[in-house]
Length: 222
Image 1 (cartoon, one colour):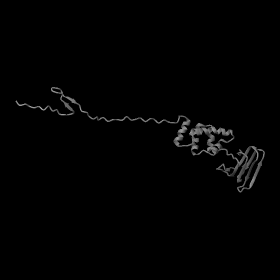
Image 2 (image 1 turned 180 degrees about the vertical axis):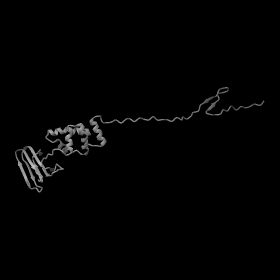
Image 3 (image 1 turned 60 degrees about the vertical axis):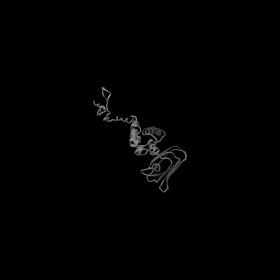
Image 4 (image 1 turned 45 degrees about the vertical axis):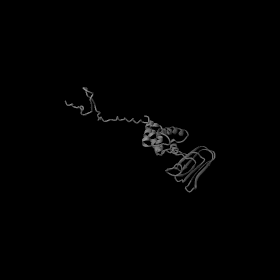
């Protein structure tokens, strides 16, 4: 009888490898690995809300507005600048200085500082806002110290020009000299006082110059 040689049972590979466990054993199928078709979805990161650095106060509102408008004051915040002006105004009055004149001649607020005062004074310092508003518009008492001034009907530089009118100086006036003169330097009227307590001078519109030496501060009368 012819022997039939059996090479073995060949199993087709469909989705994975088929293993023959042995004679009469069951085949164990190793499942194949399938690529995942699920897309990786990134979880969006929520942006942290921007915190407002300014407190919910009148001062904070002013500082917020100043930052948005780009207003700059010299080395200070807008609210601190307004507070400083507000505290200084009554002190100047106690010293005998007109508060409006002090603001405009000693402080000389620029464009940004003027904008800050207009925005902040009504809320932070309402008591002094009328004075500041008038001063910013040029309505304040103009006083004059020693010097030579050109007489002009509408002065634009109060450090060099004086308006016609009556002016008075008070105090211990020892060695006070004043004179009214023409534009050419001819003396119209003058006085040298050694021991006076009060001197009043009326400057005419026709005068050219007014000069004062060692007299103190001249204030307008009326």
